[in-house]
Length: 149
Image 1 (cartoon, helix red, strand yellow):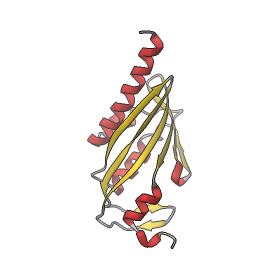
Image 2: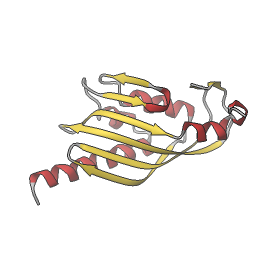
Image 3: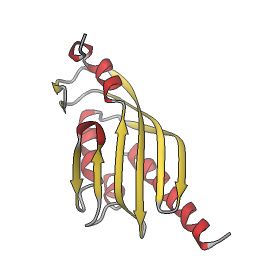
């Protein structure tokens, strides 16, 4: 096995560790994945956060909306300094959700949403994360009345 193969395996393990921390709601561990150069792009919301809080910030917000949130990674692929994780997020809508469709008051609805996160890593830190999830499907579960007819 080459050093590049080892680095790819290390990167895959790092991102698996991120989702383990997410499922445990371990904010300290999640925060440790970030650094001064980190960027997180929330694709459905066209929002980018940057800096040391870039990785923990979106997860904190998600946990405020879905306190019991979990992520089931169904596929994880690592190549070079990139890792792609695809799966299903689940949780119960218990917090106010400021979304592109407007403010959604807590509904108590148990939801599940498909996601695909693309990470670029450097030195054991997340430098860039592009987070894609099925916002339309999520909205259909939480507020179907907000969908266009």
